Image 1 (cartoon, helix red, strand yellow):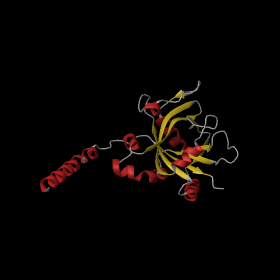
Image 2 (cartoon, rainbow, N blue to C red):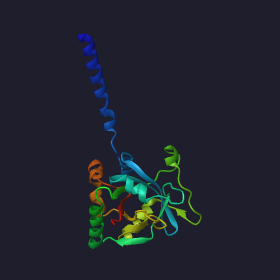
Image 3 (tube, rainbow, N blue to C red):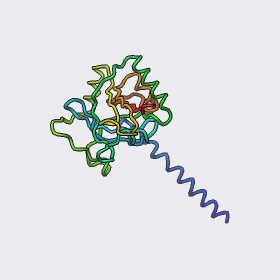
Image 4 (cartoon, helix red, strand yellow):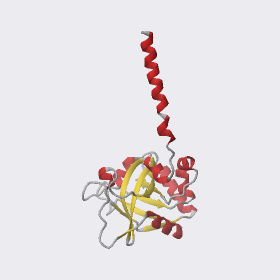
Length: 211
C-alpha cells in the first residue's frame, strides 16, 4: 500500500515540475500579450478612405456591452466594420468626461479593450478570416491610424449601434485612444509584463449610455 502511495505522489510531483515550462515563454511584444486576453472583436476600423484590420482584446469590463453594441442589425451577427466619424480632443475635461462615463457604467455598462494590428487570414479558423474590404477603401496598417490620431491629439469616436438604435436597443459610444497618458492607465499589467510598450496600439473604451 505504502509503495503505491509513494508512487502516486512521485507521479504528481513530476507533473508539477513540468508545468513552469509554459510560464518561461516570455511575452515579447504587445501582440503576444493580447493573445493572452480574450478576443472580443476582429474587423476593420475605417477612417475616410482607409481601413485598418484590427483585433480587440478585452482588458476589463463586460463582454456583454461589446456584443450588445457591436451588433449588426441586418445580419444579427457582429459588425465587421466600424467607421470613425468624429474625433475627441485629448484634453483633460474631455478625458474626465470619458472617465466619468466609465465610472457611471461600472461594472457592466462599459468595456476597455486593447486594439492591435490584426494578423492576416489563415490563423485560427473563422476568426482568422478578414471581412471583405469595400471597393474604394484602401487596406492599411493600424499604426497609420495610430499616428494620425497622435498627430491630431485626438481619440476616434464612433456612435453605437452603427446605423442608429432601433426601439429599445441600448446606445453608447466607442472611443479609440492612441497611446497617451489616459490609455496607459489601462495597460499597467502589460507594462509590468513587457517593461515598455513599443508596438503601435490603441485602447478602445466602449460605454453604454445610461438612461
